Image (cartoon, rainbow, N blue to C red):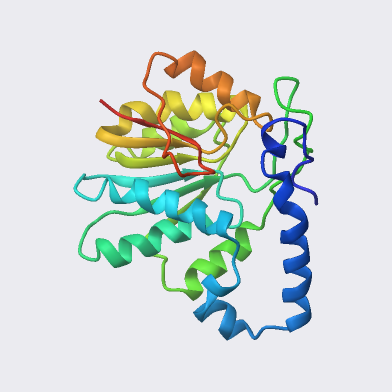
Length: 239
């Protein structure tokens, strides 16, 4: 399943890099690299833009280290972001009660007329069962909880049943208007002062619904970015 098609604006900003990336990808496939090498020496193989993404998440996480509260990701997909945060907790907060809560309905995107035509129906669909097995395999079950629910409609009920939950870091990686709007409405009052709300595709042609929801509900806030970051490309610090 193709996750999206490219437009002519922000999604083409780094188009000149794609030929070299595709050539390197084919070369890596021909090398038949052992799985152990990919795991132990991954910086030798992963692209700098992928590294940039996780350095961005690390940098924003690091800014919340002295805050109390949990971490949330909405739009878990195959689990890379949520698992990355869980491992950061194990490294930097091994004795804390901080946990990661990942939210996804595992049906992929179902865009409506408010969304980009570049977002195909069913894009970013992944397996809940496979993700749970991956989490269990790495011994992260007590640090990372995946909630299989509709984040466009069911967060209110979830928080009614889990009233104690507050967050120091929330990463919205959904890109759909209704989801982002519902998340902002339900998470903002649960983010501690100084906590960070991260947006993946603010002001990007692939996710106009995300930008619309942000501007409707948080347009009077200071929307920041790390000057060296690619994506995520925006965040707000809770006052």
